[in-house]
Length: 430
Image (tube, rainbow, N blue to C red):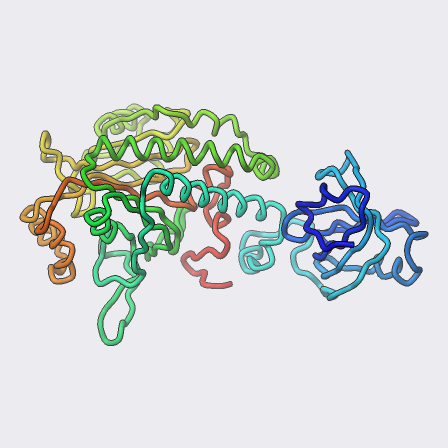
């Protein structure tokens, strides 16, 4: 007899095993109990025949409650009717812990209730599927950059200044000094690119955005590559190849999970190079044609991004936005001083911006002027300006938001389900 995980049970046909887990669901039929047991790797049906076990054990099985912790011992046999192709004929059941009044029952529950019980909601099959897709996406991201010569370089969480504007910073006291939770690791990756050529960071970022849209969290994860000697075209090429590669890998490796989520994977199979590339001006024309009144110089919001995505069957790359609606570090287009050498990638099906990036300003004097124009404290950026004093070169990069990308791949309406414990306005627990 061996302790095995459900995901490996197909290797034990005809042999006796023990599965340690929790009761996911149960039904009874006279002299039979059908126990659905989950162990985190999968769910297996365990069949308890009254004739196979002592009477008190059979009665115990009939009284088991949802999410009670149990160990089940029995013989594995093939069953083509089972979702995993196997079941266990039980000879022994041991109760480890009886769960009482488990709050999440098979009936429908409201989102607020489920979010209050997020620590328990994670046990459901749908949430399992979403978070397994997330884990696969993260693995694909790391594999991509690691196999393309990038060095993983960790960026700090505490920072002395803003990277993406001063209106959405989380401020904290840092031993008597004012500090902020990072909005992005980009500035530090620029230093890394000057040291190692190709780097990326991957970690949590924080935006105190007072937004309740389905696309926003106050704490989310980003991967941010940065490359020395890259221009905007290089940056767009990298972003395109990166997204096409990671989406294909997740679709290939997580077919079962996407089936659980009832995701139409044919819409993901079109995510192949080349992606359409349009300038901001062209995007503006599309929006005007669709009746959306957006003035030149305004950034695009969720509604605009949704309308634009309707025009394409794969992500669309939009570049050269007006300079004033982008961050201080974006390089001005030498052919048009009104626009920046920046890029956004908009996911199809209305999932919004998943990538933002561009070429960085590499001229010291210009960057100093931009910091001053944006009213930012120069002393907080003294180290950043050093990168333009000592061997400055053209360089570019981008950031991809994990939660929005997971939401798009899974077909999930709201990003709150794409992260284990979401942080939103008014929600700090569990």
